[in-house]
Length: 266
Image 1 (cartoon, rainbow, N blue to C red):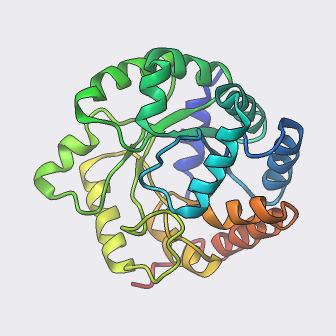
Image 2: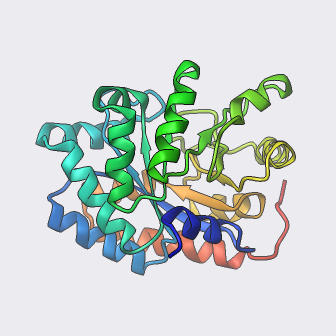
C-alpha cells in the first residue's frame, strides 16, 4: 500500500498546481475543527498543512500568532494537533508545519512517530537549526515522514546546496520575504527566478506560500510552482466567522484552475 508521502508526491508532480490550505490546530473544539476541514476539502483543497501551535512563531504575522495563542490557552495542544492531522489526512494528503521549539521539547523521534501514525505525509520544521538537521532527518525518515525545507530567497548560490541537503518531499519557496499575513505586492520576477534556481539544484517539487493573499496573486504564482499554500486568508475567516472559509478556499481553487497551462506574468 502506498504511503502518505507517496500520495503527496503523486499530487505534487501532476501538471496542475495544487492548492494547499494551512489550518492551525486546536483553535476550535475538535468536532468543530473536523467540520471545518470537511468543508475546506469539499471547497477545493488538494492538501492540508496543519500548524502545530508554538509560543514564539518567529516567521508568522499577528493573525497566525493570535490563532496559536488561542490554541495554546485551551491546552492539550499535541492531542488536538494529532486529532486534526488524523482527520485532515483522512480527507487529503496532510503535512505538519512546526517550529523547532516544540519538536525539541517533545523529542524529534517521538513527535515524528506521533504524527506519522496519525497519517501525516511530512513535517516541515521552518526554523530547523543547522546542527539539528541530521537528527531531524533521521527521525523523520525512520517514521516514514518527508522532511521538506523552507529555503529563504536570500540564500546565495554558494549556500543553496547546504540549505537543501537532506530535504525530502518538497522545497518551500516563500513568495514574500516578510512574515505570514503580508498583503502587499509580490516580486514575481524574483520568485520565478528563485523557483528556477531551486529546480536546477534539486529534483524535488517546489511549493510556495507566505504573502499569496488573493486569488489573483495565486493565479500568477501558480505557473511557477507545484503547489500554492494559503494560510492567513483562511485563518482570518476561521477566527472571525468560520462559514466563509470554504468560500475563500473555493475562490483560490478556481483561480488556480484558470491558470492551468499558462505562463507566469513576470
